[in-house]
Structure formats: C-alpha cells, structure tokens
Amino acid sequence: MTDHRILLVLDDDESVALSAALGADGWGVHVENKAAGAITELRRHTFEAIVVCDSNDGARVRDLLTTVDVGLKTPIVAVVAAGDVRTSVDAMRLGAATALEDDGDLVAAVLAAIKDALPKGAGPARGADPRDVLLRGPDSPLNQMLEMVPQIARSDAPVLITGESGTGKELLARTIHNMSTRAKGPFVAINCGAIPETLLESELFGYMKGAFTGARADKKGYFEAASGGTIFLDEIGEMPPRLQVKFLRVLQDHKVQPVGSHRPVSVDFRVIAATNRDLEKEIGSGNFREDLFYRLGVLPMHLVALRERPMDVLVLADYFVREQNLVNKTRILGFTKEVQTHLKRYDWPGNVRELENLVQRLSILKQIGYIERDDLPPQFLGSEQYSQQLGLYVPSEGLDMAGTLEKLEKQILEQALRKVSGNKAAAARLLGLNRTTLVEKVKRLQIDVEDS
Image (cartoon, rainbow, N blue to C red; front, side, top):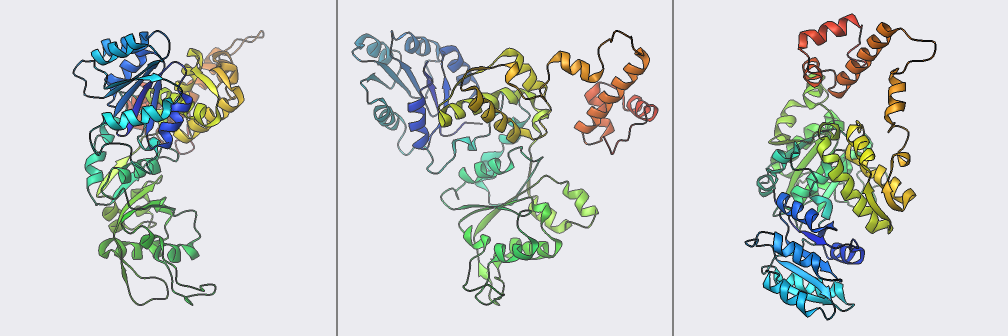
C-alpha cells in the first residue's frame, strides 16, 4: 500500500526545523540520516517526494542519486552547500528535479521546490494527521488488511473495526475517512462507553428546546454534525440495547429524530464503528442485537494486538522517537540492541498506545543519546532478573529441580493461554505442541483456563 502524503528526508542533523515546517504544511515526514537507510525505505514504501540535504562535500547527494533506480518517478530535491556548483550540477545530471543552495532560507525554498516538482494538484492533504498512515514492518500481519483500505475508503458501506484497546482503531478509522471522498467533511468521534446512558440518546440524535429539563435551545446531535462526513462510534458494544434499536433505524433510513421532535431529519453520513468486545458473544448473552451486528459488519476489519506483530514494534518505536524529537526538541538517537530485544519480547498489554507513552516518557527523561537498558521501567526486566523471577537460579541451599521445572512449565502454559484468551488450540500452536498434549498438561497441572 502506498504511503500517501509522506516525504522522505535524508539529512544527518535530523532536519528538525525542516521536518517541523513540512509537518505544519500537512506532510508526513520520514527522516533518515544515511543514504543506505533511505534506500532501504525506498524499497519498502512509496513516497511523494525525496529531500536530500548535504551542506558539506555533496557525498550524500551523490550516494543517493547514484544508487536509486534511474527509472524512479519520485521527484528528488537536492540541497547543497552555498556556492557548491559542482554538486548542484552533478545532482541535476543524476536525476534530481532541482538543486537548491542552502542560503539560510531553506524551508521556504524546499516547500516551493516540492510544489513545483509534484504533478499539478498533488500535495499534502489539508487537515490530515501524518500518523493517519498506520506504521508497520514489511512482514507485518497488518499489511494484507491495509491493502484493502483504498477500496474500503471508496465505499460508503459501514465498517466494523475490532481489536484490543490501544491497537489504533480510531487511527484506522481516520485513515479511511481521510482517503475517502468524504475527506473534506467532518470526522466526528464518539466513545459510546464514555457518555452516560441517560445522555447518549440526546447526544447522538439531538434534542428540541423544552424536550427535558435544561433543554433551553434546539441542539443538533452527533449524526447531524457528521453530515457530509464520517461518524466514528467507538466502543459500540457499550451502547445500551434500547438505543441499538433506534440506531439500527438510523442506519437503515439515514434519518434521525431529535428528542422531543416528531419530524425526522435526513442526514448524510458514513458510519465506522469499533469495539474491543467479542460482539458474537455479546449477541449470545443478549447484550447486542444480531441484526445490528450484521448491518455494521458489512466491511469488517481486525487490528491484531502488538504482541502478535513484534516485527512492527521497532518500526513504531523509531517513529515515536522522531516524533518526540520534533515535539520536545529532544535528541534521542534510538535504542541499543539490548533494549530492542526487550521491546520485541515484551507483551504490550496496552498495545501501540503503551509503546507511544513509553517512548514519550523515556525521551523526556533521557533527552539525548541512545535509550539504554537501565532507562527501561521495571517490567522490562533483564535476563538475570527475569530468570530469578521464574525461579531459574540455584540457591546455595539447593533446590527441588522437578518441582521447579513443573512450576516453570505451569507458568509458560498459563502465559500462552493468556495470550490467546484461553484458546487451547491456539496456545498449542504457540508452544509447538499437539492440542491433546496441551490439554493433558493443563489437567495434570490443574490450570484454570478461565483464570489464565
């Protein structure tokens, strides 16, 4: 999937001022400080344009331009040192769309050069959040799902996004909206679980003056506010059954009836709903209407938990570091190899949101340099501490080896079952066991699957 509205910037000083200006102009910015890293990113993703800066000897400009595919259609803007005519000529000869001299007004010049180099009408999407492109590695399990986003964005059919809290459901919803024909319309997000049941109906559908105590004037509801755009109903599983009936009618007729009114109002919206609940189980329990489930789930999308896509952890972490460097003016260079290992091994119960919060906290506290093992919070234990926590050490008085191994086996089984919400077949696959073998071990070790 193409990374729309994203620029690749190659510069050894991380281009803080330039990246901030490009971001303010509506662009997403991916920064690399070595030509090899930029070339790797070009093989993985498609960018709208490339900006390569070299205020020294021009080697970086030549390295990039002599290595990239000569048939590359992505426009390249080269920035060279003031007076470096030779590098400017070489850059143009090697395929750059334009070559600029860094004369102190770099930001304005680069923005103008990008605009001139792009096809007419191309450019950043105004109001778009650069993070609306979900980040992932080349082998991420998200890739197949994200390939469908352009087709889904072109439709007006309801979308149901499922996944654990913190996996980026609202981010995906905004991405669909921003890529759709409704992008210029409003994106109205409501958390159905955050509004009291007594207020939810009037907030969604609106109300008329005098409809209830405190209704001193007519007020439009969220559905009317979203007319011409997208309404995002987060935690749809929290919507009370009584309101589900009314919501189903709104979905069918695209008309809302404000509280206290007898005249329905036509509304033009696209609905995207999200939940971290298993709605099929909720249907069985009588908490969610089956007809509403099928009406919402025309285009189902599932965001897997971060622990199920460890190859994405470092991609996201690097992105959040660059973001924090821009926002907080920090100079974090990245993570040591040891820290990278810990990040990939961690379970991430809070998913992407937890990773973002971690990087923000570490960046603020560290300010400069690499994030090291000692910078991590206690839950990111070193191998020795982790071994001791599991009982993998021999005290001076000795130990009961059989009992210790049985305890360890039980902990591993319980952790595997927790990862897959108690699904024995999935836990067996995770551990490389036959399902019958796992079931026997669960019985022998008296593991309560529900507690796990």
